[in-house]
Length: 459
Image (tube, rainbow, N blue to C red):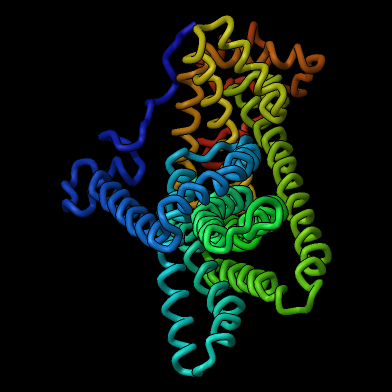
């Protein structure tokens, strides 16, 4: 059988590509529009913010306090990152977005919060001549507004400039959660380092020390507090990403509503210490834990819904001949996906083969979500271009991925072919000559048919 793809292979950023970057490839953009300039400016900004925040925290905690705070604050970080990465496994986001989110929270957002909170609290104390009230007002009003706005800026930047990677609620939750994890990491260094310095002055040691109490409250009891607040904002942006381009008011108001709710939750949590002797524990048990449980359930349910969407939407490409009959089932099961990658690593060339299968799984998932948005009339203007890019990426990896996916389908469950799928010899040898068989009756599933019933852009 022929091994070349049945259509021109497109790749972003190459001459002839019908995508945005391809159109600009011959246009000689200005120097400030070049990708390396934008990335360089962003890295420089985050690096300078990191250096400044490092100097500020070290000045407040001292070198020894900084090292103690760093060692204790890092403990919950791997667990939180692992949780958000697990949630993101269905359609993994680019690592650049995840690194940016964590770095923004730990450096830029933390710097904005420290400077703005300190300035606002001092100004209120000077204006009211009441430092105690200024501290309370700063913790319950100023800090939630400043901190949640600073963290939300990372979600907004990814939403605006990496729109192709921001397609739904899970993406909003992951970006917001990682941003808040980075912010909490830096904030915990400050609080734990300061507590250690207090213990050094008072001579307290052991379980009764301020350091132990701070560690218990911030790291043991509530490591999820900042992620919980900011995830509300992320959900707002995720819902906006699912909206059509014409609903501008909805795309603005829903993220704004999520941000205001995050600020309110943050303020309620910070103000719990003023609710009496047991106010903190009452708010923790009656509000924080149920809210955390509800959002955890929502995230897991959304992940399962994504897998169901993959199984349902990819069926169309089985009818058209692009995918094998078992692939929607395998790609809609995280266990089967893992087995396919393991099989490729053992039998098709080690880690490069496993990486190719992982990429195949990710591209197929993106294709399913793209089609889902298109059927609902919520896809962007680049629907056809993006679909061709994804199909091309799948075709390039089919030699390794398809046998591995078929093996996983046999290992996980009995064969579950799609009814009406083309019944030619081993499907992984593909439909190179005719990806849309002329004899097949399901022309409505052909994404390049101008009369496609599922094409939201047909006239």
